[in-house]
Image: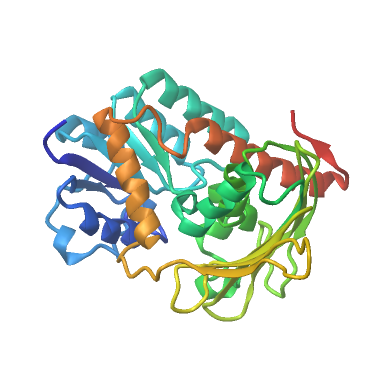
Length: 351
């Protein structure tokens, strides 16, 4: 494919919609936005003026009937995602789907089946897979620099429900099916599998509403995930901060080293505080600061890398993106299991 990839955007007012569109400004030589389906009851309050003249359609069916395009960025609620993606896949359109792509395992399986049957290029919004520090951690594990991996702890705490308001669709059980673990913790659940290259085999969890604002979905909680090697991962987080703010960090421990990862260290692209063995009197201690990233758009540099990976698959340069239908399905299944394990009050295995 030598011409620009023509992209339709579905879900204009998704919370990350403007960020995705800003990201496209970095890849103008490769792709262009050519049409819109607002979704969200037709709302276009976040639509940028530069795109206000693009053709707009009320439905994906109308878009397919009237527009010639190659691919679609899908940013709709969990309730609508399966039907939208199935329709696009049947029409042979390449798909980039905002995470978590689906809210339930059955819907994720529907999406995987439709995309795999159509053979179209598929990418999701899990852009931490393209982060410098995340990939350095992945290499450390691949090269056995941790020794035996013992534990991984991740914290992801962000603005409370009141920042968006309890009526927002993210907290509507009919639109989203689940709350914090589906919309945000999914990033760390996906990344855990990517960094370790291990499947999650069991889940123990405690989730619910912990703040003073009641909503129909969980506002956060804790999950303990068993990895196939015997290591354990602990996730804690929620919509718990009474302002627009966030707290994100990881700690990885092995028999030979431990590492603290601060993705938000000021004036860096993330930082790794690495503590190694002390075979004699001198211990290995190091801090790695990734270069600061000022790339505009959702996810910055990793977001651009995610788009370029998708474009490479569309062109036939690679067989698959770093995110796949299999990895998408695995993450949704783990989220489902976290919710069910908390409801049942017991550990559940994942087979």
